[in-house]
Image 1 (cartoon, rainbow, N blue to C red):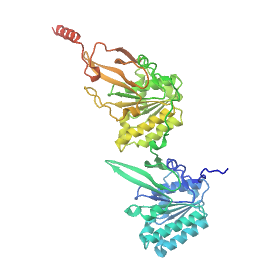
Image 2: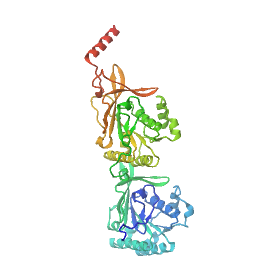
Image 3: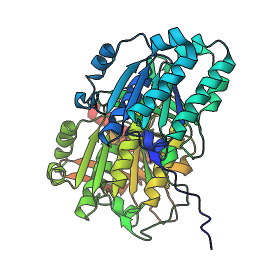
Length: 499
């Protein structure tokens, strides 16, 4: 019997957070790849980041520039980045300017220089930065193709991985771009006042990779890439790892309405207006989980940890000890210019690495603001829901209704059934000249629940659910009405008081 399984492909890790995930381990050894993007997108930072990572692992790097920028300026600019280590120069990383060689001897002289220096330096990684200069000085497209092919032959023979950096001359994709083993395109795009950076793998010969546009940012640590959440989660149908188990919310009356709580591993949407009690209800869900031995995570956008602790302490919910013990985690991201997939990466770490069993995501509309394409948010959330289901994590997230009062209530997201198995509806109503809250259960998949509308009480001793509003009508509209007889009694009482 012979082994028919495909041989394992040896990889050269980039050491760049997220990029190795997109490339399923890194570049293939001995292959030639091209990084293409206009000036300012971070090509040089990315290439050098990979070079220093490779050098720290014992590799030898040859970095050839065809740019007008001097090596002193290049190294000086890299010095502010955390990955830069001057001790590796020139012992493990050699910078070589080849612009004059290209200018005086053309592509043949440049090709000979690369061949000679790669061999003498015993390089396992070669970077040619500024291929656009070679494109401009090439006598013909065929000559440039021959030059690229020659680099591939030389580096492949010695098992050296090669990166070619080019701006593409603004002429789109050309024949030499199809010759390389892989093509990565970096772009900087403007959406209104926002500027976002995205990386796309256009081809990666001989290997799978994660499709689509992946956001990245340039930080003091270099390039940080955030793969699309939809490409990271499993695609197999989720199984229920805890059948029949209920997750109580810790609110007397509400858990009884839910026949003991929310089904474990399910997803619940808290729908309601500002001030309706969504955040307090979600935090009560997390606190009750800690009491039952389940680690919780509060993913917040609007209330800082300090404000959240003050708010919960005012209703008898002491969460600070739970946070200090590590049983309750708090992540706070101000709702400014967040990157959607960066938020997704943080959520996945909480689920996969820190053993979180209950997750409260407070602010669906903040996800919408983080997304540059609003239509994508539902798919992002669906991927997160699927991940939680497969790992037995019970997810609760809040969605704010556009209006506090009125006869119409609309869901701010489409395809609710895909992203919520349970829906709790919170509402503010004016009844007998008082503003009151009520909670109703619109849906609990495959489970019995109480269909009545009950008052949600928020007091200094905590949350509780009271009796149903048996004496009121049209509560779901937010414009409650009393029965005619009772309304008449209230009117006559008011008249006597005025007298």
